[in-house]
Length: 260
Image (cartoon, rainbow, N blue to C red; front, top):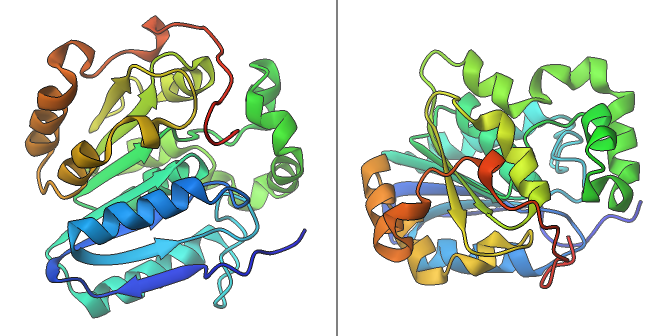
């Protein structure tokens, strides 16, 4: 598998170093979402750590820089966090990066986590049973994970990682209400302590693009869960707040923007 020449980690001290945002990019071949996330984190003005998985394996193969596993990536983030010394830590990510944000947010005891259209369980059996759209597009990556399922299984289920925490991180999961694959992936998070599901009136995997830059900047720079809730209610209304993905439309619309 060819590895992209894009930097796999960027660490910058911000204009306001009291906050640190860690952003995991999604699938390697697509540039739109990572670039959009990079622009959002720059607009916030906090210190930031941007991560990119050159192997397209949900960060379980590391990102280079002497990292070989997901745990290595978490240790690398923690090393840079200690050097930046923020008072607030927010972790975010989209798609496979959303899965990484869910798990890393719990392991690093982040103040807030924002996961956009995340994977929640890296289970080949579930993907086959639900005929998940990603199974056929990323089968090599799933096969790689399946072959290493016994070595890394403890981190394959983001839901279990969050439930195992003594103090669950306040987590917001954002996804399109009209895209059945993301609705199905978010179902395991229903009722998980500390997790709130936020839906948007769109029908594909690119919720990060649909949510709106102004709202996202406000939500990502919020330091409390209540501030995120207020920003969401102001922009999208209380009617969609904390929706249950089992009650969403099952219409499977084609991804219009990223082709994910």
